[in-house]
Length: 207
Image (cartoon, rainbow, N blue to C red; front, side, top):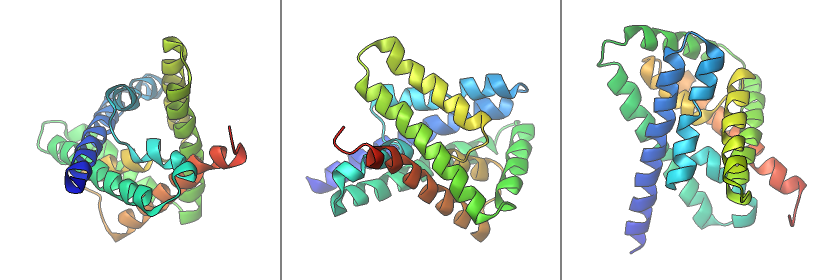
């Protein structure tokens, strides 16, 4: 029974990774970065409306689920997100969209050329925005308000130049840019996303 629960979580995480990656494909294909940032929101929109499991959407609830079981869940979700983004990123490389893969490679070069401290801080900023988007969707009753948070926070984190670990997984797959340095960068960004995700809940305990 326990194994079935973990398998279901992994499947939902793979689905989330696929959806975030599709948002990344759209972003890569848009000449206008503002339009691309808005359309990228389709990824998180799919996650929150279909009950998928996304690391950056779950890690903010660690303070109220501070136990080994929840940490295990987060690790399984990270693995599933990686698999989902990998499926789309590697699949994209099999298509005629060479220009999109080249653009992804350029983005990855910027990330791996950055300092780890910079990536951590940018990951924290993104984690805050992701928590606000997901928690807003959960808390608000009005359908318009629920979705407004998603379609505001996602473009903001993209246009602000912050780092989203799951989206970055996709870019590294699509750009064929995985390396030990890339893996370290994604790990640091994921840590930053986690710190940012728990920051708001820790600053407003009991609310």
